[in-house]
Amino acid sequence: MTAPTGKPGRRPTIKAVAAAAGVSTAAVSQAFNDKGRLSAGTRRRILDTALELGWSPSAPAAALRSARTRTLALVVRRPTDVLGADPHFSELITGIEGELAPRGYGLLLHLVAGAREENVLYERLAAEGRVDGAVLTDARADDPRPALLTRLGLPAVLLGAPDAAAAVPSVGLGGQGAGVEEAVAHLLALGHRRVGYVAGPEELQHTRLRLGAFGAALRTAGLRPVAVLHTDFSEVSAVAATEALLALSDRPTALVYANDSMAVCGMGAAQRAGLRVPRDLSVVGYDDLPLGRWLHPRLTTVDQQVQRVGALAARVLLARCGEDVEPGALDDRPRLVVRESTGPAPR
Image (cartoon, rainbow, N blue to C red; front, side, top):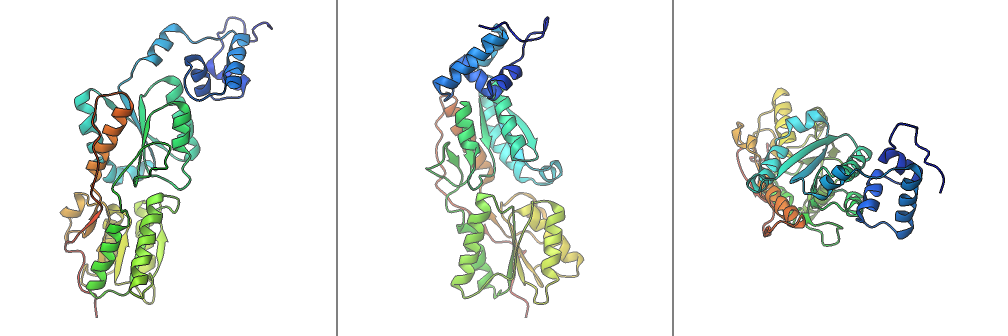
């Protein structure tokens, strides 16, 4: 065995071990805790590297890692201004906290800018033993996070349409396209034939499901969307998309939005342009958040029971963390709630 290579007087760190072994800090932690899915060769290499550097986990730290933190993580990949302006997450957190607080659990909220930051954060949370599990938001196409959390040995639940093939349980209402289909049928019954769609980011699973349902419902009626514009859910992009659609020579008489926050922004943009809702333009949102009931006219929207989804996600995750909790199930689907923001198509 070679002599330790750490600097004299300074104890080597877990990061130094990870770098020398060519692995993550989470992998080092798993090697010493005999957890995760490390191969025998990788675990041996990590242990040999740690021995060579003269590093070992401190006893107090190991004891802390082996104990439950009674804390769950909710990581949201959104700009801070978007999160602050979107009540969807307030509703979701209300549902989650309603299950955690009575059981003495807390929720650790993190905002990240992109995929790399999110993955690094999960590895750090697992390595430091700061949380018992994580709620994954915004299911994506070819989502790498379920496999990552499984590799890290961190229990997780994915928010989205139920998917038996996912590496972790997924929680959400089934039939994600049903609410959009109802919205299109409602608009067609009111005489609308020029309908546009303001969607979310293309990589999100629910964006693809709902947009597919929107296009299919119009095709069944022999129609095509006036236009489909993708946004990042921000107020700026929602207003810009609305203004672009209303500037078309053959402008839509109805707009469907991917969430209520953007629908509210769209109504404001339309009214500033001199259009009356719903006489000149009908507007449909998605989420059925309280703000839609506070407007005038009140917002027609799709109810996806955000609080109930959050509560079920919390129960599923608590059960995966070893708590004696009966998760239950959601046996409903998104449904259209008709209010005053939709009306007959203008002549």
